[in-house]
Length: 413
Image 1 (tube, rainbow, N blue to C red):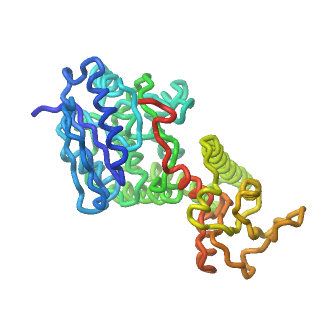
Image 2 (cartoon, rainbow, N blue to C red):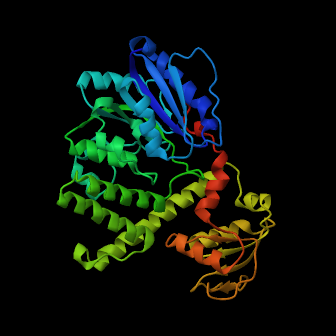
Image 3 (spheres, rainbow, N blue to C red):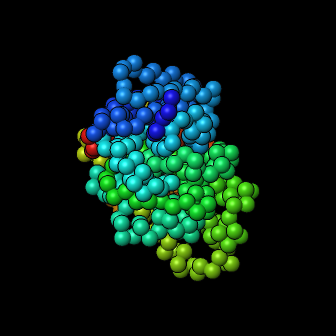
């Protein structure tokens, strides 16, 4: 049977998202009788074999194919597996927690047909009020390969992009990334290198869920995925030497910002510029962490609830800067006792809280919470080696608290 559009959705612990995904796609099929204009199929690729996916049997206006993978292969493999089974002329790869408007498919398909384009990217929201792109700046860089290589991925998520199946580079289908995170980034670079262009759909159709969950890809994982992407591009030989150099310099900047790795002097960036860049990244991380914290508080959830639920009644705080101080203040009177802080330079002017250095012999507690924004993984690894107590970054703690977040809270699809 001829199919016009294939919607491919990899699932990882994704059973809880299926009902909403089916409902969203049904609304899209019904919008302006889209199902009469196009044959649409939904391909669900279950990348978590420990969880069986049950699809509600109903008279949907689209066909459903469920692919059960024998083991966890990762996001890139799952998307390619879906594409290999897809019969549609056009492909969209949606993430399991994405939200779209009811005119998402119609608008994207109509734009693709009208422009006769190979790739079409729509606008939408990043959070409740922020738009994904402003045309003034975005139009000038969405097709600029050097920008992707030297700065960042222009496109927030593949769910924004409808693709003509025949325009997907064969190299992307054959060379699978093992590290999750940058496979779509790799696709856009390959597509532009092969002279494909993105047409712009100004309609606001797509909502990128800003909340993270315990299975979300963190900055360290994304960095590793981008490094793997660079190695693949080098192995394939698709980029020129100068283009690969641009990408590797971007990776070096990311390593400096995220991991504290020093740049080589041959990169031509003076120390003052890099110190500024490092501070910028640090405060950006702090901003988003505090934003997550405020959102959780606005929902009436207290951090102390997490500790009580897990019987962590006596804790220590690593890092007594602004975030550590806020955590200490929030836990006052909650029944959770902060036994001490760990910080090389901190002093408690009220004399209420003992402060130790990480090298000191630390009293046993139920949990240590790490509140610093730099070298977090290294600090956690050291604390775990030196003691038997659980250690958690406050960012991961906030994710654990917000894991029951309902996507529809901000945007009713």
